[in-house]
Amino acid sequence: ADPTNFVKQDTLLRELVSAERYEACVARFEARDVASGPGSVVAYLQSLGKLDRLGQFDTKMPPPAQLSLAAAAVMRDRKLTTEEATAAVTEAVATAAADRSELPALLRDLSKRAEGREDVVRLPPGRT
Image (cartoon, rainbow, N blue to C red):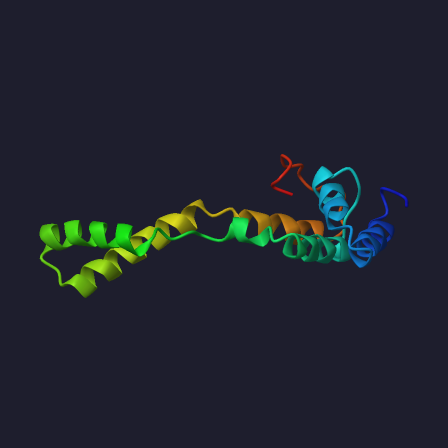
């Protein structure tokens, strides 16, 4: 398939997904050596899902015991109830995790690549 033609590349990646060659689809898409369009993005996301790799973009919360310890410290410092302290700590941790998330950057990149343009910025492998 012509590497500069996103329509042909979309078709190729869809065929890789149909043949259950998810690793090959991800590798080709992340190499950024060929054009991509909306079909390529969908095939890439389907492959990530089939390979159970979408979780890497989710924010991870610490275990409840760790949150409880932090909540106890907040309770002492701020004179809050257990529920208020736990809620404050949970929100702070979730906000910090969301700030570090790579998901917004991934979605912006995928949105640009779905347009089928050639002027897409190259990112290091693993970041699409």
